[in-house]
Length: 497
Image (cartoon, rainbow, N blue to C red; front, side, top):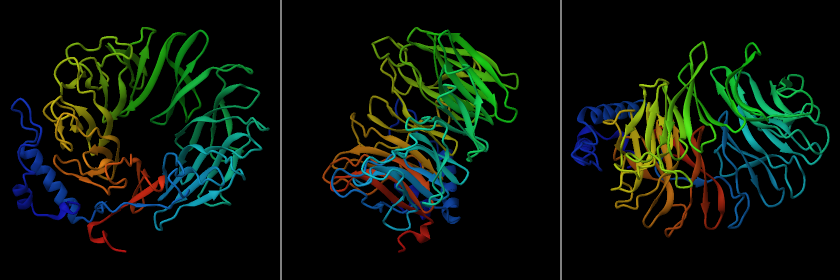
């Protein structure tokens, strides 16, 4: 089915694509004619335009960095200008920075920053402009901020903020405009907020929250429409700050007592910042800051477990709420853990759909946005945990496909969207946990290559588009965990050498 985008609408009609989707319950049609017809028209238009698509199941390994079943244990993949960077351990030089462009079957080490078996352990890989920024320890300067253009000569230290082997240990890297913000401890000011334009001269202390060597705990650095939002934990209070990158001014948006837990900062639309507040009760309230005046107000108290996976779509934020708490605290006794949304108003904060009626709930997870819809995994109590999607309405919340019939379900996870295609892993009988892809239309989910045969689990994750491929991490029983690549090309180019 990899080339289904080019087939005539008549074939789609005969195959049952248009009509009532699988998994309809209580007499409800999963897909209306108009919705499916519009989706098909869009698919045909996309096919005619020569837009890229996954080239069937033909994924291949991108080099065997560490021969043997142990693998190189690569870290998260980050795309920069058509290349993919990641940290990995080849068993000789320790954990170092590697790069691939997918044009060959190999990756190459960018630079051996710390010669010897220990490695520099690159982490917090972050793209800004056409360069990669990351934290690494060369064994002399300690953990500091580095940048790379993908070449050995172009991989250099940005600034040695704390001379000596201890290093400043930068953390929380976040890009706002043309600057990279992070926290660091230079040994003089304590751990404070810093920023850089990528040069030593342009690296500066941005704000000192606690004068002198003292420090607050700075957390959850978040880009918000040209601003930087962050949480500061002190001995007496917890505060939500916003820093105006353009003017350098900062102000407090929320302040709570020291026992407050403030987290999950999530921008949505042009003027809304959502966040969660636990005032010390073990349950959370959803808050929002809105508008030019930056007015901060509470929206809803959620019993039981903390709301999870706040995900922006348009001017709203979606999240799972109402599940039973970690220590058995009762959640929403009527609906259980279900999908909610909020547009930043009291009236606009509501349940999207009760997918699994009763206190157990469908427990949506893996919330991912693609082409104006939200995709997620949920268990409706009939099909098991399977992929679903929603347009934000109860009627528009539908099962995408029942990959593993029966109540066990395929338990999809590791969702990622790339240019109109959804990638994820799922477990099915005989294949184990392997990769799948879909254009999002109900009934159109296709398997990728069975990397770990005989029902073993490849556990693909970290899907990212770069150039003519979608890269991901997967475990082969012979090679261990290594990077893989699936060609992502116009249909006319799929299958060409």
